[in-house]
Amino acid sequence: MSGDNKWFTEIFAASGSAFGLAISKKLDEVQSPFQHIEMFETTHFGNLMVIDGVIMLSSRDNFLYHEMLSHPVLFTHPNPKQVVIIGGGDCGTLREVLKHPDIEQVTQIDIDEQVTRMAEKYFPELCESNNDPRATLKFADGIAYMRDAAPGSLDVVIVDSTDPIGPGEGLFNRAFYESCLKALRPGGILVQQSESPLIHMPLLKAMRDAMSEAGFADLQSLLFPQMVYPSGWWTCTLARKDAKFDGFRVEAAQNPAFETQYYNAEVHQAAMALPNFVKKAFS
Amino acid sequence: MSGDNKWFTEIFAASGSAFGLAISKKLDEVQSPFQHIEMFETTHFGNLMVIDGVIMLSSRDNFLYHEMLSHPVLFTHPNPKQVVIIGGGDCGTLREVLKHPDIEQVTQIDIDEQVTRMAEKYFPELCESNNDPRATLKFADGIAYMRDAAPGSLDVVIVDSTDPIGPGEGLFNRAFYESCLKALRPGGILVQQSESPLIHMPLLKAMRDAMSEAGFADLQSLLFPQMVYPSGWWTCTLARKDAKFDGFRVEAAQNPAFETQYYNAEVHQAAMALPNFVKKAFS
Image 1: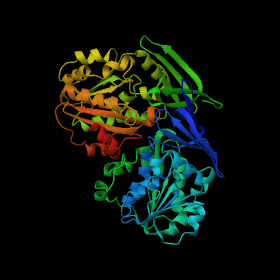
Image 2: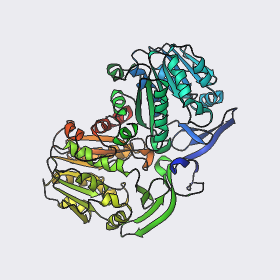
Image 3: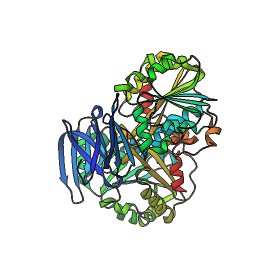
Image 4: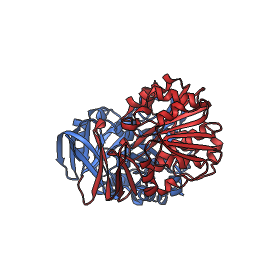
């Protein structure tokens, strides 16, 4: 990149595209036992976290992803009480989940404590609910945690992971989804970030296939914008344990007990609309 | 950008962000009387047109923009027959409009013939309907064309322009919108690309204000993904001459006489859902 500023640029080799943000300074970096974490201050997007060279989140636009990974699944489940977040070390998803007053317990399992330590310093707004008495933060292997979880103990599992390379790899396969299915109560729902509909369709389809093969009864992929991720267009996929999806709690979503920047009931409905090329790919 | 390929990179100074595509070769370039037009072959996105350093379209993802600039307005108008496209020299919007069998006449007015000559060479699929007997291609000033248009002669005006700098500048102000309003028949609708909801909100709001001040009775901004434009998230804004918007022709949109890659009736409905931060900005 040229220009007066320094840039952090991520190259998406698989799609021959690249995205950059202008950087005013490097704030911090740490090599954890699992990955290399860097923090930058950008000129226009607040702070930026990069793991192993891959953009994770910025202050300015993370609300899109965090809201869409939390509120659609919680307003689809009829009565969620017990939630587990796998990954999510920046605590942004945790904050959104805890906005729901009826949630009784949320356990966040990120393998890398350093991600949360960095978030506490550079995204304090995302960590504002970490001391909520309903929240437990564990730093452990999410794959093992779900394998060992008590059967039928959870209402919602949220997989807020990095891409399927590195530590996140084992979160995208049938064995992991079987663990999640077993841990869910009747009516339970798994939701996972599922990459770009435009440039990662083979991966999205493979995830959906693995969820079905693991025994989930129905799938629902939601689409939403996310500027700092490849293509600027992203998905999450919901998988329901034992029944077809049948809409969501529209009235509750229309009258939330909390504020959001992106999510509302119409946006939820809209996220379920599949473009023709996506329908074709899923058929 | 680093890596083995060459890159075309566009820096969005106003948002401190940048987007790049890997280039396998430069195909062509021309300095027209109005602007500098470059054509590249990318590694993953087909051909790429760049005008004055700004990415206009790629083979792979232009369907998003062209479909959303055409089908929503044509399925919102009760019975569109006479259409004018201002700009649109790549002919992609023209092709989409001509897919509607009931359209009687479409006139495309781009100031720069060289854009169309380049499109004929490097995006032949977008020009496949240029010889449709219902189509007229003129190379002239769209501002003057609309100023001189016969009052009450058009059903739909589509402004498919570059950004509001350079030749496109005069297409984003009250005087131009007054011309459009006068040229529209009762029930007529103007639609214009209206930039990114995430990073161009002041511009989007200024456009909406100017449309209202020109006398349009109601506005409707639609949101859709567009990878190669700043933030990957884009809008178009519909302005109706003399009445409030009241949905669209859902049944017709559910049973189109043609194929689309992105657009369908659910996607149309979804595009109207405004996120909370957009509602707030518009209020």
